[in-house]
Image 1: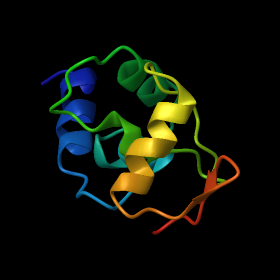
Image 2: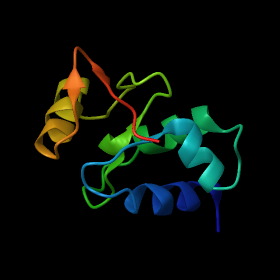
Image 3: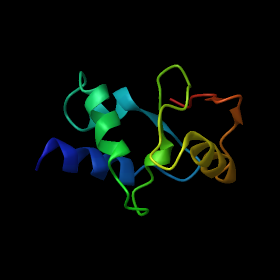
Image 4: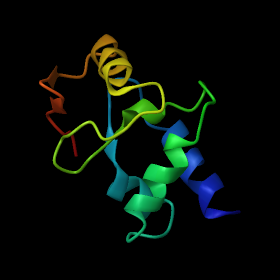
Length: 92
């Protein structure tokens, strides 16, 4: 299985109302040093069945989102994630 497929598999299992950092996704996918690669992979994903909006930066920042950061924040809020001023309280 390619690293890309592993990343998308990990992301697809993030429960509604939860988040993971890019680094956590990278580690679960088998390469703890590939957080930036995870960012590239999720930014290129347009499959709505894979909740890429649930992947955030380690400092609680939103990071990017291919449908816009405001949309990412709206989706996270709708799921009950505490979003304030482009940051979240990370749940690890």
